[in-house]
Image (cartoon, rainbow, N blue to C red; front, side, top):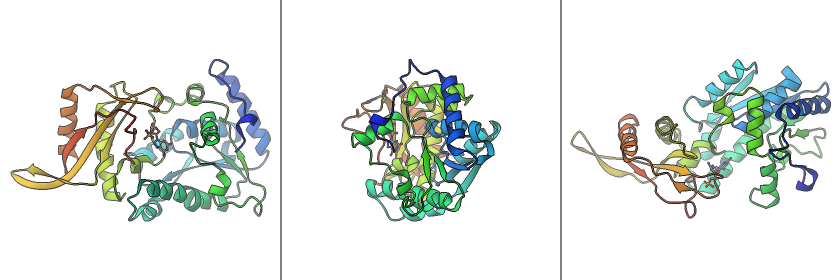
Length: 325
Ligand code: XMP
């Protein structure tokens, strides 16, 4: 990654999306020449924009991979592949669920869980795909805020090739290309619109890199992810028009006693969070109508097997964080 002083930010008021796209397309064509490139798409706005610019520039010479890690939302991998298919971009779906759940097995510490997901993605799965491909160019959706946060020490120093297990000394020739490095998120969203990406992509609410694993307290197993996934689908549907910044469901580690059909049922607890925020740095709980909260509780306890308790968190950030893990 380049240092901050090498990179000139394009401020929102200076950004001309169409001209920006043309410039980046030309730059990619020049850099890659007759070679081939590879990138990973997650469906987030950054990787979606890079995928579209990359395909405009390189067509079939860009291989785009979507890694199914087993911790995505309901139907998300297939939906993203299908959506890009409709835009004329072929995306390869790689099923790596077993590798991710294998790496997460037995882990309960938040940092260890995050680290396992990062390592499995970079070193085990995507690293292997890159090393086995003939591509020497890697397209990466680094944005200006990522660079700033890395410089400020908020994020770990990213050397993407090192993370992929590629020794640049021995395996000379790899090159990382970062078409949106001069833009912040609002700029990326503007470019996404200009590229014809649908609203669900360009105005996508934030979603964490560790996906639903950030919302499972304790061990991340396929069964526990399925519980939080079902609750998430209900929360996202019910709160889609709430105007809130972010809304989520969290699965707790502790079970509590509930009642079902006059019998005691020792079951799961789901915690709901819904945030008013502009930048995710601070946040306040949204004052949701009580009727909406009880509807959520009713739906989750009837539609998600094993859940007997639903709570709403009314803590601000700080001291809370937006996610639970
Ligand atoms: P926290 O939980 O730190 O979250 O208050 C702040 C914002 O960042 C998102 N988030 C993440 N995004 N990788 C990401 O790409 C992560 O590991 C991660 N953790 C949290 C979170 O959803 C919120 O918008």
